[in-house]
Image 1 (spheres, one colour):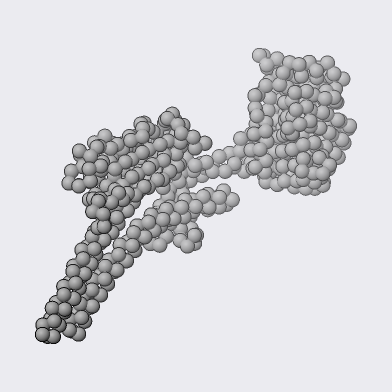
Image 2 (cartoon, helix red, strand yellow):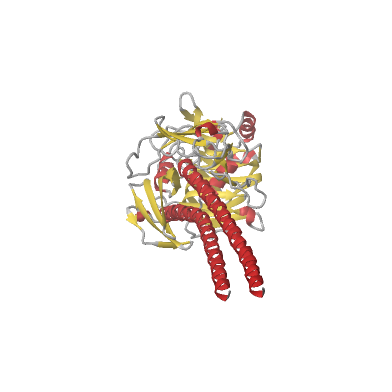
Amino acid sequence: MGKSSLLIVLGVSAIIAFFVLKMNGNARENVSTTVNMFEQTQARLIANTGVEIYLEKLYADLTLINTISSPQSLFNGTYIVNLSGTLPNVRVTSTATFQGINHTSVADALLEPINLPNMPGGIYISANSVVDAKEIGDMEVSGLNHDSSGVIKGDGKPAVWAVGVDDETQKQNILNNLLKPENLEGLINPMTGETGYPSVGVDNLGIEWAKIYQYLANSADQTFINNIPNGTNLGSLTSPLITLINADANQNKTIVVNGGEGAGILVVNGNVKFAGNFNYKGIILCYKNAEISFESAGTNEVLGGIIIAGKSVGFKLTGTMSVKYSQEVISALKSNLKADGFTILAWYE
Amino acid sequence: MSTLLDIISSTFIAGLLLLLVIKMNLFVSNASFASDNELRMQQNAKTLAEILNYDFRKIGYKHDGVSILIAESERFKFVGDLQRPGETGYGSIDTVEYFIRDSSYSLGTANQNDIILVRVLNSTDSITGASLGLVKLNFSYLDSLSSPTIDLSLIKYIKTELWVEPAEPVTNFITGQNDSVFTYWEFTIYPRNI
């Protein structure tokens, strides 16, 4: 009887043990199925992240082209990136490993240049109204084409308007208030290319300046929210900088640029005052989604062009403000400004 | 007399224990079968998801213009290079089409509801395979704002829903009825090249 009981108990135990092991094995396999999907996804995400990281690294240091990274750790996995190609084109191959699962992502990218806004005039004003338009006449604005030294190239053609505006009303407003028409020299007949003065023309670009402002602001090399002292590096023509002056973030809502020189794109959000002897080669974009004040004191010169966009634009001038249009300067900016960043052309994952 | 009583009693107890063992064995077999079936169902669902996930991420790769050719709830056709640089076939644009066939094409399974997912590569290479327990498939298409769209040029996301049942019905040991076990798998893919 005792032996029989023992045999039965052992038999039942064996069946139960087999059952438990079987259930356990299936449960483990079930979890493994789900986990494997996670591992594949994780490997793919690590590889994709490797592509993104090394595109940023390449953007910061273009000498990394045609190099292979060492294994990098990320999210408990590793990845290796190969940057190959000839700039501005690059192929980024990222191979990731996570828990024994491999994934390779390949991205083709193009290094895009900064898109400069068109300059239809030495000064281009995009606003619903222009306050103190007569002050413009106190500036010396030339739409004639100058070289990078500020000397008129040949006959100054092709020229642009000395002052370009959005519509006829603004144009008449400026012309009616001009005290020194001879100060605005440039294109006077767009059909023939004839130059003379006063050069004020309508050329509505239909551009959303808020977007252009944001685009350039995002690409800025440096940002100022306080007055800029003389001697601050604002770039040179061989190494131009995108400088954001965020006057709206300043408690006085106005920033003073105290003399000095620079080159590149000066992006101004809000009211700005150029004081002292300020020489700038490039494009100054003043934008504010409200009234904007452009103030100049002392002897200032801009070689390139100025764009002023706002709901209304007010000018206040003391001293001399000279603005000279220059294709040569704008071309140099296009060549020498840093790239905008990489644009993905194709992505394999 | 007492010996006879002992034998009868022990035989009765032994019989009870034997019945218990047999019943337990049946239960174990049934539960094991159900467990295996559920595991296979889960694996089948994952296999289907992997296939679709692999292909959908190549939509539009190395192709300019609209890459989605057909976008219906049970039929989807697109173009894109399925091979990466360095692989054989890289550089030629592939056309991939997915559609379903009803259960009459799904022979060899006891499930009356299963359907076949067909993948046609470049209009010639048609992979039909087994049903893998798929009983329902639904593609839906979303634009960049995640709103449903049928405009092929606006599609940015492809949402796939799969309903998978066991290929063989699993009879419940207690009720004697077939269990209505199924797996629902949903995933939304954003192909980077569209």
